[in-house]
Image 1 (cartoon, rainbow, N blue to C red):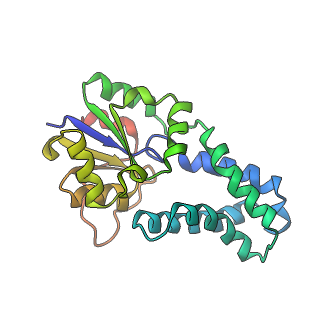
Image 2 (cartoon, rainbow, N blue to C red; image 1 turned 45 degrees about the vertical axis):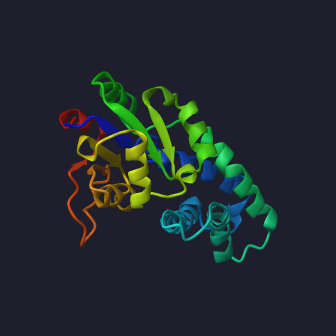
Length: 232
């Protein structure tokens, strides 16, 4: 029987993809990047592909927070030989503050959190995101009240999927692994990380993508957060 639920934030509860895309679109036109790219879609494809790679590197502790936040904006500009540093500095400085103000949540987020809280589960947030920005997201979307404790990789000094991260949150909450389960959208960081620490997992995969080849099968797979009512 599960008692403790460890839940990811970005693209699990808070719709990072939509919120980020909205902010990037604003900055794209503000800084006149439509002069260099065919359209925003072309820019976003280049940006998002490299950004995803950078976050994987960050999770493995191969790059710093500062490098990630600069490189994700400088890469698309390099692809078009844009040397205007004011564009890079402007986008880099404005992106995170604007992002933290966005409030779009994943479908069924509040309904599901209310259900889980009502059932008496202990809910814990587990995130690799930058601490100061995650706090603003949680505050803006009024999500603080659902969690018993928040865990950020920056503060733990270890990122998901490391065993150190998951073992730390289990110990810090006096939880038992067999009574705990991790919910997240990132197969590598959330699901493999939990599996390697011998914690059950629920892979939240709205897109319906197949499980990565050579990987194990998660304990559960859902496409909608409201499906948790059938599991928990």
